[in-house]
Length: 562
Image (cartoon, rainbow, N blue to C red):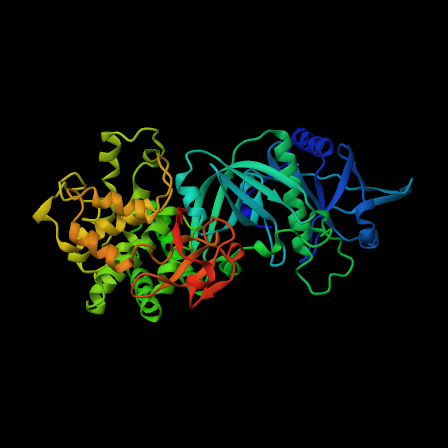
């Protein structure tokens, strides 16, 4: 339990003391702690007070402590009263009676009470081995996390990086749903406040302030705080002796969802080994997204590191990397899109370029859309996207370029071509500069084609995901906006049914295209029983070699938002 000693205020007014103790008696939730270094809270019942004389308690729940207390061991009581945390000075038992199976005990009457005014600083921390699952609900999205600490006014959660999307889109309180090991379920509304990232472990630490929910919510949360502290005390020593476990943490059987805990284990959910290696890049981008929102610049050292990682993975197995970019569905859309653009742009234009130029292209592709976190999020929820919305959103490009101060290694011309030019169009209808024709360099024109293909392959609020054939038709029908040479190069390079497409075969089976021959025919397919984004638990066997003989000819693509 965390609370600063100097935050307590000592109350000596007898009327106030009586009022606070009456509240503890009426509301319950009182804990007894021995005055020892490893003291742990134990729930008791405070029954009566005789002002200036004695307190009466039922200690039946801590009968194993009675021999210590009757031997003169000092203790103190603690509870919540009138929105404050209240603690007595050290007390001693003066009388013990065993009546009707209950242990009724009297103690000294406190001459003063310590009151913690800032109750949020009184915080119960979960120790290793204590698991409370928390669902973070925003819109139609639910993210699973773990509780790290709890106070009367808020909590800290450990969440996967994918939660950054829910947090960045939130315009009001989010629902937090707690599930304790014994099945106890509790919901509360909270506003996200403080955020810290752990890119190596793919985690966020997010602090929430609870929305006021009335006396019943306060009572329940205080009970949880006391029980967490009580259970945490059992982990302080290997020999737990006669320490009684909290009923909240009693496991009735195998815990559902235990395999879905956070950290590195979550990586196992991704469909392929290459996708699991790509998750660290996604974790970096998630962390960078939040850092930008909190006023930081792009972390140049980390961007360099993860751009090198993509180059290495591409040199190792380009087709496996192309498919892996389709397997990141748990990540926020802006992260998935940035990774897919970086990989496909590298594959399209970077073959004969020096490594430093390829690295700059990858880096620019990864972050090109992160500036969208810096514009008002209400723009993305507008029912009708009007000219004023477009103008406001177009500011994301310059807002991001202004945050590249720590990226001295990144070629300014490459960054300007990709980040600054990816949204421009040949006819001048693009943004942010409304550039056209000869004002656009080749890399900007190529980036625009890659960006549109990747964007149209994913669901948007105003339209569903498109098949590659539909996207190709759209590009070819707009030669005034997109460079026809780069459209043709893209189609020739990635083929009519690219790696990462969900193909439908004449055998009525469907599968993800993993590899193609020089003519664009599939040579390796990952079977997909359901038309869902590829994850480890919804894909089947790999078919290699003569795919046509095994599955029949390809008869089309199933549009899936990846």
